[in-house]
Image 1: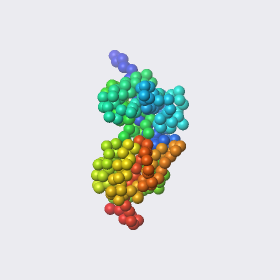
Image 2 (image 1 turned 90 degrees about the vertical axis):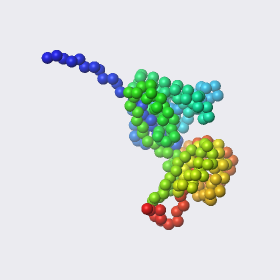
Image 3 (image 1 turned 120 degrees about the vertical axis):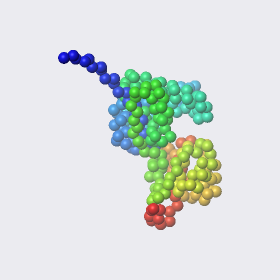
Image 4 (image 1 turned 60 degrees about the horizontal axis):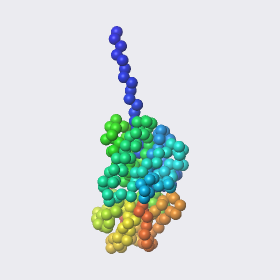
Length: 258
């Protein structure tokens, strides 16, 4: 009988995007905590300082992860850069981050990437996963869902997001008022992210549409300095990472059931 030599199995490289919520450590799911603890290393995105080096203070994702993972297992990676208008510099940052994570996968086998909110909702993990797959196609990519800012703000403000047959629109407002105006016309409930730079324009649209009295605003949810209030009370600049909920109008119980 001829014995056919076996080829050693190639170790599986696994990259897991873990949603860690808006900032409150208590909102990380059990599955998320288990995924962070199971990974050989946990990558956390950090902003770059003016000189291009990582900022000293931890970002929201890192601060949340520190509650569950020893700092010795964290890898701080400059990824979320202040390069929202320069595409070439953004892509250079994605390439550098992908190369670093690909090397971590080769060395350690399993890597978790912690991202605020959910890894499939406006997350840097999307670009990282695409870049890593291009470098190491054999990598298994997974995600663990996280609580989003709109869910957290809805709970903290007592706001119902959707009811019955209502539709919900979620959009970033970095481009200004036109997207918000169109969403308000087409959907009952509208949630807006990242509108700090255009807050005045957003408030103008809400006033024009007669929807400002029902809208709620939130920033730094679950963190020191949390700010949750009616949108009509806003006055002055707001943080870039702010959330706005404009709920549907409801007059009777169950009136929106289809």
